[in-house]
Amino acid sequence: MRKLILVLTVGVLCTFLSKAQTDVDALRYSQMFPGGTARSMAMGDAFGALGGDFSCLSMNPAGIGLFRKNEFTFTPSILDMRTSSTYLGQTSDAAKYNFNISNIGYVSNHLVRGANPEGWQNWNFGIGYNRTNSFNTNVNFTGVNNSNSLLDYFIQQGSGTTPGNIENTYPFDAGLAYATYLINPKGNDSTNYLSVLPNHGEIQKMNINTTGSMGEMVISLGGNFANKLYFGATLGIDFLNYNENSMYSETNDHATYPDFKEFDLNRTLNTTGTGVNLKMGMIYRANNFIRFGLAVHTPTFYSMHDDYSASMTSKFDTATYSMQPSTGSFDYNLTTPLRVIGSIAFIVGQHGVISGDYEFVDYSSAMLSDNANDFSDVNQTILTKYNGASNIRLGTEWKFGGISLRAGYALYGSPFSSNATPPNSANMTTTNYSIGLGVRDRELSLDFGYVYSISKQYYLPYSLSDQPVQGSINTFQNNIFVMTIGYRFRG
Image 1 (cartoon, helix red, strand yellow):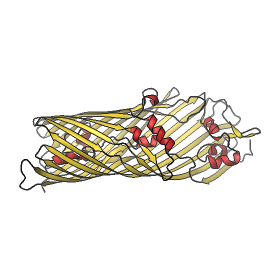
Image 2: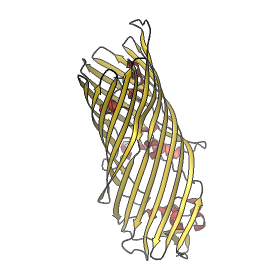
Image 3: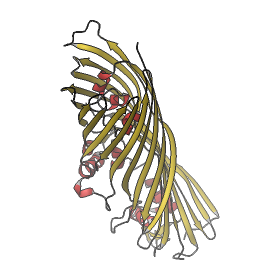
Image 4: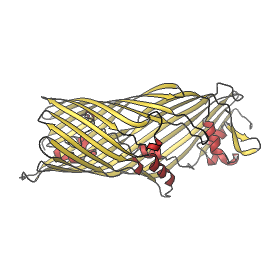
């Protein structure tokens, strides 16, 4: 081994030489799980044919045409997240809490003076914010791996690269392992490496903590024609913020290499993005009993920025080696898929409604790009790995005097194509169950909602070209509590 000193600290500041943006990023920012008001969330967000709720501005903007008064809404939300992870036969649990603002918005109602019953009745303007996704998660998993190691990946990555070039060529991966003496040149062959864990049996641990959200500022305009047809359009200005901090470690409990104890790899990723889209919709009231809705969302065109870093520490009986963070940044563009939503609602007199939405989104049409136009490999992966998904939302509401009881169900289909489905049904299908209660008088309203959401995802800590690597099966269970305060008034 090269000469050891008690503490080795090396600082590296450079540009990421191999892009960190992958198909996973494109999928993450293409998925939407609508937030909005407590009423909408309690009814499974199935409001495409109902209207009259601020959340419609992010789903079917024609719903703005059904407002009869000016209205202000404000919706705080609390998330209770629980994760159960199974990795290499062991199960670990994690939890996290988050407070956020799900919605704030204002709709201005304008009656058409002297309106003909067969003509335009009113036009409405709305502006505000709806939350469209949450990235708050916490995942822990651990297990004993008798087959392979992250160091094997670094060896494969660095193969063919001389020691003098490996740190600059792979500053976020194999270069870190080399600088901390975890992989070393193989005898006289300076372009191949050996690991300090040749026999395996190490304890692998990982924690992934993510924060952030996606939200949309909506500017909407819509109208009511003859109390039969409702039209609307929304200019959506979207914002996203994603932060990921991960810590991966391997501990040697089997003395497979003299005096080696453990290593830690810490990575961070901070992504921000601003995008724009256009939503157009209509609602048709066939009669007093049934309504139909249709909405089309153009792709969202994002301008993205990533900041990322990685650092590594190795511990031996006689020395500790630390590689200070390698950092990088990158600007690029993301185009998310187009969405189409068809809706139907049944109005049961003055007492109840039953509604349903069907949404289709083709995740394989997401696309990354930059000025150099060199995302062809990633975009090909998106095209083959993902597929069109069907999302179904159902909801009902029943009124008893000034009190409304609500319930909902939503199923967000798997984005994966048939040849890329993860094992153990961890295909990111998400199921929501919801209930709610509302109290309303002429001007004020107070709505409560609860959503239970469950999904399974598969996480692969690394991959090897010559053998399979087992991943972690993560089950996410979210409890979401929302409350909306609403105020209606005449202008």
